[in-house]
Length: 294
Image (tube, rainbow, N blue to C red; front, side, top):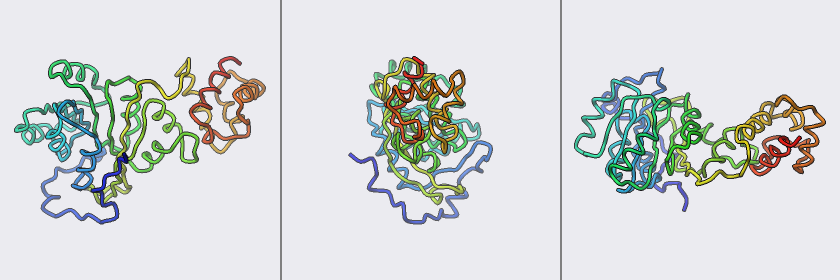
């Protein structure tokens, strides 16, 4: 089933009412704050996240709570983690009547999510965990990779992000639009698009458009490799100079001469003249093992 919400009206222009803008707190540029104000996008995120009463929701950066309340209506429990101390008390007041929301003041990059998840699943008998968030553009990738690399016990991550980053993530490995982040995310999760969100869907309006993606965390990685760290090092080296051929790009790995790299590429049945963006996840896995044996 397509994750693209039928409720989305991506082509229309949204102009926030002056009174709505006055009710919003002043956005902190240092925190990358742009408050979501489009109800169609909010509905699409809630629907696309597939939340139910057996679900624990971890919301990253709840802001003014426009997502928090509709998510709480569907969830068993919801834990909202907000960095901006100004917003904590208003969020607690706004969500008090739901009875299933806890607002935590903290930095998601320094929060032990697994401890929170373990506690709530055990205490309330919840079966699934879904992370939802309108992520600040400047730390989108670190947040996503932390959630995936640390083995967060989440079943899915639904995240708003800059469209350029989202397009790179949602590209299929081995296509022109792919990059290091493509392979990194697809290694851990299956990616689907929920909805586009133009700059007019936020206040203040950012200079770029956004997109919401859902990452369904895999039970096991997309490919099997013996050394994950080296696997990602090979991918990063391949894209270090993406306009160059693999043979030249992989020279940045260090510890290998041109003859060894050529031999590894031949063993992996990869033309040395290809570029990194043309390799599938399986190609990179095969190349990694060939280089390990070189």
